[in-house]
Each structure stands twice: as C-alpha cells, then as structure tokens.
Amino acid sequence: MTWFLIILAVVIVLILILLLTKIKIELTYKHTKDDDLLMAAVTIWWMRVYTFEAPLIKINEESPAIIVEEKENIAGSESEKDKKITLETIIHDIHLAERWIRHVVGLNRIIRRFLRHVHVYKFDWYSDVGVGDAALTGPAAGMLWSMKGMMAGLIGNHVKMHRMPKMSVTPHYQAVVSHTYFSCMFMFRIGHAIFVGLSIIKHWKRRPKRNHDQDQKATETM
Image 1 (cartoon, rainbow, N blue to C red):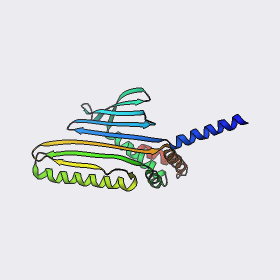
Image 2: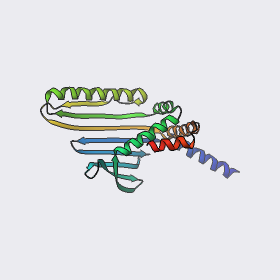
Image 3: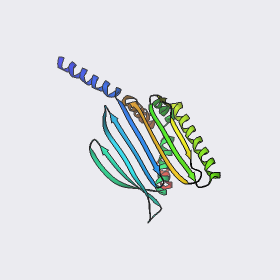
Image 4: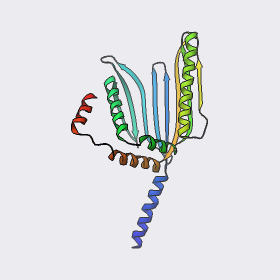
C-alpha cells in the first residue's frame, strides 16, 4: 500500500509538472526580392525539440504551382521534402477549414480563452518597400504601415504583450525594393494547450449530424 501511494504521488507530481511546463515558440520570416526563409523552433525546458525551415520557394515551370523545400528536425531526427502548393490544394484546404470551423461550435470562444494565456515576449517586423516610382511608393508604404498597426493591435487585444512591438517601414522612392524581416517569440503552458484540445474534441462531438449524401456532396465540391 505504501509503494502504491508513493507511485501515485510521483505520477501526480509528474502530471502537474507537465501541465505547468511552458512551451516557447520562435517564428522568423525573411524576404528579400525572390529569396524567402521561414523558420520555426519549439523549445521545452531549454531543449529545442522541434525545428522547421523552409529556405526556398520557387515556381514550378511545368505547372502553375509553388515548390517549397521544407526541412524538419524532431528530437534529432531530420527530414527534407519538397511540397507543391497549387491553387487546387489552397481551395481544398480553405474548404476543409470552413467545414471544421463551422462544425466546432464555440470555437472562437475557445481560442480567445486560450489566447489570454499566451505571453508574447518579442514582436519585431521591419520592412523596406519601393516600387521605383515616388508617387506610388508613398501610398504603398502607408498601406503597409496601416496593415502592421491593425495586426499588432489585434494581437495585443487578445494576448499578453510583455514588450511593445518594434516595427518600421522604410520607403525607397527611387528603387524597386522588397525586403521584410519578421521575428516573434511567445510562450504558453502545456496545460492550457491540453485544455483547448479537450474543449475542441468535446465541441466536435456535439457537431450537427450530417447524412451520407450531404457529406458526399460536400466532398465532391472541394
């Protein structure tokens, strides 16, 4: 009986440690003319457990598609693959997302509740823009500033910002320039992520039932 209580206590402590453990996610995106680099890293207890890198985006000459070279590292196991993105795959993914959001009742409320527990410690977004014409570069820079302000305000209203966002837009009136650097770092506890997952599963089971003909018709339209 004593050993059982000890094992039970150890299990409970381990579960509590897991629920309270923080996950740190770092996102970085760089764009310079035709070169793009997207990087993501997940860190737990000072250990980087997952990294993702898409260093090259190119146009497929044989078909209207974009080829993305992806590199993943999961706990030391590396993999590389090419992913083709076409208009059909984008439309298909949009339809799937719409169906998923429509069926998960209260999804917005669940996501907002989770975002209240997300802590953002870094939000940097620097851009250089120029279209070769001073009369057009000014409005383009203004629109970019407005978009950044709206996004920063939207994010700040739903998460906990621990540092003011650092953003800039540098116009180049006499040259064609397209450069962007974005870096973000945020953290949340595993327990909150598990709660969100369980809530989504619970609401998914409550989704309205559809008959086979409706599901088949929705699948054919995608």
